[in-house]
Length: 348
Image (cartoon, rainbow, N blue to C red):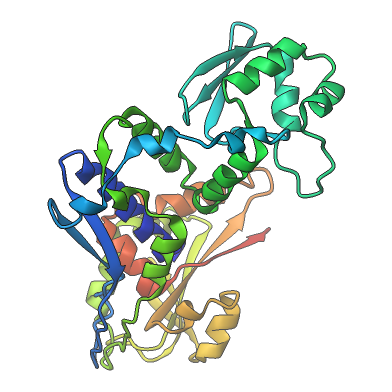
């Protein structure tokens, strides 16, 4: 519910391809086969994609990964430069060290003033920063020319046409908090560049996304109500401590199809479920969850409502995160799919 499932599936396939590639296997991905079941269970999810794993099937499609490091000279003729997105900085000995993860994997020691160059050469939507060599010298006069040349040589600064491709790839990962995973995979591919990698580990993102988005599976949930005993077990471990310690975190349920409960709005208290009002229509639930259609299509929707203390306004983040600590993956998965837990905040 909190991260796009298709994106996660793509990264899982990418990671599996790299891992299995070390043992001589290849992976090929295709859309999930059509599956039409009249009564699907709330607690089961259909396939998202089909991954074929084998040793010989795709051997003729393997490409030596050294091609990753071979660039046509025309790529290097761009006079504009951008900061390499495949790296990070550390502060050491009164200066900077730029750790490049791709393409060469170097540690470049720089004076502290070089951070002006790194900042100046970040992508700009306004296009108001001139990132040619002369433009960098003009904007960062305190940085010696020799330092800027070294930053170009060590690929701390990249030709903009190469860097733009890297930024486009990085945005696909960073948008949902996968930047560190992306950096790790770049480092692994660089270290393993002498190995023959399966082509599936280097499938362009748009091709992989297309395969995932061609999912033709349809879902029709069970017509019978969800078993409250199963559902309540998801909350007992994490919710009970908040209820017993007079926490400001409260839990409200819009129940539509749960065994043993009349449809309506309930609050979960230490004494049990207390009915507060009449049933909410699915359209109303959708409005109350900021237009999230999946939340309105479930058997029950849960709201975690937190009273924010002005002196400790960030404490609600810890409380919400604590709900998932110690709960197994299946429980979190079911809570995401079946319940959808938005968090409403208010101040005293």
